[in-house]
Image (cartoon, rainbow, N blue to C red):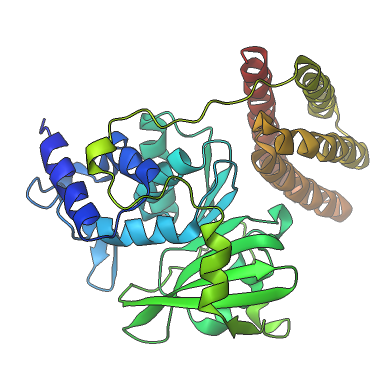
Length: 396
C-alpha cells in the first residue's frame, strides 16, 4: 500500500503556485479524497498517480478507453462551476466517480447525479463511491448524457466531462436554473475543444471561453439491453442564443465563489468552516411529517396490485415530494432529486405494466413478473432512502 500524501501535497502546491488552484475548499477536497481508490488495480501506476496527467481507468481498445482527467483540468472544471454548498449538480460522463466525490465536498448539501452511457463504467463508479460512503449523496444513472435530466430540472450546475458539439448543448442549457445556473463544457467538433462557461439568467444565456483542451468525445450510446429510448432532443427545438459576454459571466460567478484567495498554502490547515445556524425544531418536525406520509404511501403502493390504483398512489407520492421541495431550500438538504428519480423509474414500470396488461396474453406473464419485480426493487430503494432521511433529520 503506497502512501501518496507527500506526492499529493507537492502536486497541489504546484497547482497553487501556478495560480490554478485558488479555492481552499477544493484544496482540502483533493487532500481528503484518494484518487487511487478510483483506479482499478490493473491500471494503477504509482509513478503516474498524483502527477498532473490523466489516469487510465477503463480500456477496451484504442478507440474505446476512458481516463480520469489531469488534476489541473479537474481544478479548472470545478472552480469554473463556482459550486455553492447547496447546489444540485448534473455530471455528464462518470470519470470513475472521482470528480463527483470532489464536487460533493464543495456542495455537501446539494445532490449530484451522474449520467453514464456505459453500464460497466457506471457499475464500477457506483462501487467506488460506495467504498467512500458517498452512494447516498451521489447517484449514477445509465442514460444517454446528451439528454440530461429535464424531469429533475432545474439544475444549478451542469458539468460535461467529454467533448461535445455546440448544437448538442442546447437541450442541456434549457435545464439550467434560471437564477444564475452554470454549464461548463469542452465544446468543439474535432480534436480540439474550447472549455466554455455558460451562465443562465432568466431566459438569457451568456458565454465565456476559457481555454483550448483535448477531450475524448462524450460517450452517448447506451447498451441495447437497457430500457432507454435514445432521442435527438437537440433537433426538436430552436437553438439557444448565447451572448458572448465574459465580463458578465465573471462578475456573476464571482459573487458565489467561496474562500478564494491569492495564497492558501500557509493557511491551508486552518479551520475555515463557517458556523452553521441552528435549524428550527418546528421546521424539522414538519419535514418529518411529510416524510412519514410519503413512507406510508409507499407502503400502500407496495401492497397494491391494480395498475390504475398504483398510478393514484404515485400521484400522492409526487404531491408529498412537491411539499418536501420547500424544506430542501431551508437548509435541510433533503435528497429530493434522488426520490424523484426513483419515482420516475416506478412510473416507467407502471406504464409498461399497463401496456402488457392491455395485451392480455398469457405469453407475457414472464414479462409482467419481471417488470413487477423491478418496480418493487425501486419501491424498496425509495423506502430505504426515506428511512435514511428520517434518521438523519432526527439526529440534527
